[in-house]
Image (cartoon, rainbow, N blue to C red; front, side, top):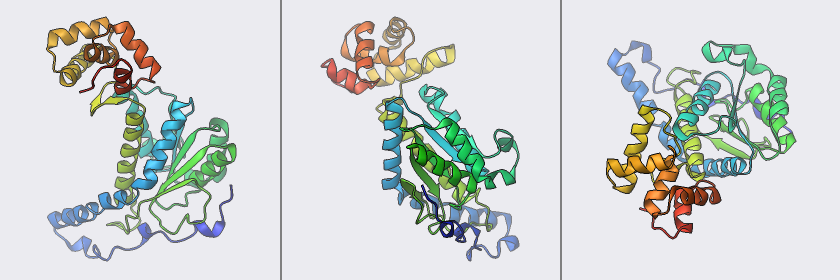
Length: 308
């Protein structure tokens, strides 16, 4: 994979002065906040323009996980912290196995708590991390507002050379036109309220993209039923209460019936749900789920039951 040097030295729009906020330091507190809010409102539309490319990334990531491979996030600074937070929330929300999402943050965990600014310039460190951990069939998603962070680009180059699919989330429309990355997710957020402060609009855009990406991947993998989280297991009283509420929402049955079903399913919410909606016992429900990769609707279809 080749990255032409001239493709990564273009000045990013995020570094330019924003003509709408040049009087920022003369405004009242309320007007400072209004100026920030006005710029923030531009971010969702910028993300919306990337959805076709983001959909490709989601499908590739879901395919990787479905076939026993992994998804990697690569970032530095704010981008790496955003990626770390997103990956950390997938296990408690969707019972995602910890090995599914791997985060590579320039500077390691020390950089999560405080800035390690020189780490992002180490292209070989990024490449070395992915050579050691990525494999053909994986999906690697890089995040860099400027589109030129050496640690991230080195990691993507190394992953591509191994045969992994690669994607990049960035906010510099000029930085990566010629780069050999499989899917470019170009979120043009423009100049920041404070020039160069990419933790602002660019960071907000990355948070939206990451949340949308990982949520959509979980949906594609059958970790939801309708818009309900159904992959959690009732391992304590709090989670049992939540699973019972979800069962009641999904089935319309009373607390007693749902509690009995959850007991029969040994705390497995999906098994209890398929059992209640199809009328088969928990063992048959578990077998149907196993045969459909854990998709509740598909399991119900194989059992001839109507989903609600």
